[in-house]
Length: 549
Ligand SMILES: *Cc1c(COP(=O)(O)O)cnc(C)c1O
Image (cartoon, rainbow, N blue to C red):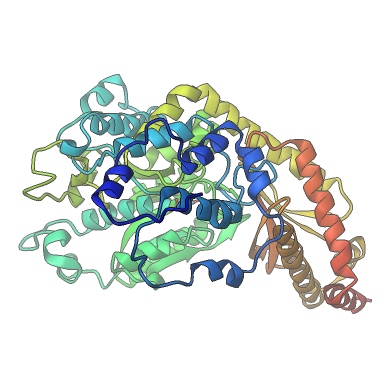
């Protein structure tokens, strides 16, 4: 690259703070290649063999602060060899294991523009037009969710979309912070000012519980709720054990158990901060009965939050919107833009039905986010934030509702197709039916399938444990090979005596994933299974099956 050594000098500083003229930097070359052909670029640079984490760590063991500067070209060389080449090809059509997937090409130059402008949306003085743009994006998505409810008409949105004092929602880094924000608002509204008690923000949680006569504070969600809710209970001072897990029927919340548990909580003098419905569970993509939950929440005057981090964009689709019926009754909704709005990580939103809801968490300071200002930072948990709204705004316009609708319909349609492929094979078992664009399945050799049919609960448990080992091994081997990727998870399967089983988990969000790719994934898993079954995993499975006779 260069024989000359970089020196700490004003000249070096001037150079790194100025866009290079004429001469092309090594980074610009990578940038150009990635923009031209991401798939080709990554294929060329991604090593197919998985490196053990300890091997990856070897290049990152140095703890001494780099004393002298280096040239950008030297750093670029390091990045290309040690970082880009060891990153995960999330844009690959065969990478169908997680909610992180391909993004439309225009997001790439937009992200660059966003970082080049380096706006800070905490306050209008550092973001100017990014402030109303962000509010508009929030307004559009708020209307997507609530626009069908009574009174959420043009007039409502004209009044609130750019309101100085109230907000329809907040932007944040993702679903976790969105859920936390929603529960923060719910908690503060439950422990509202009363008598001498000036509200939880001022007087704290202990004073709030005394003022309202609560011995505990709880949040309720089905067993399939996202782990971010546990984190939120921790951060908000409720405690993780006060996230009450409600039983499920077919991976959706059991409303009878919900009613029972609400009574139990009231009996122990617990304040119920929120009832959380999931619109698209992270593991299986199921949607809770939101209408039924909304009715129960209304009856008991509980804040109803819908975690639609994954599934809320289903509302774009005329065909599938009905699956989320009841979401318009939610007091708050989480939606992740870096999932099904196809913007890069990380962007999420918490939306609130009542434009005054966020008043309960309003903060101000003298030099920033002044009272009465338009500053977005008044209502956000985070302080400095990037102008991600520009990317969401662009996605909404370039793709439009109809574009997003196609993406949703394609994904759900493909999940149905893949489910059929699995069901029509003799050696794969569909473990959860897709409702949205997620499904789970596992490899079950024919003899194990036969044995499971005849086995009692105890024998079946042993077979299922052996199958779980097999599923785990296949998934790891597939990941290591690096050609295709599905993830794995573990939960109780009602069709197998509620035994916890490890299953493959698939998320079909990449529009370029074809039927052929899906077929290849099954073929690869079948081949891997054959190889593994001749080893210890196979021995364990055959022994468990033989015990049935
Ligand atoms: C992804 C997800 C979250 C968390 O979102 P992050 O963006 O990863 O913080 C929360 N809930 C559900 C249902 C999710 O799918």
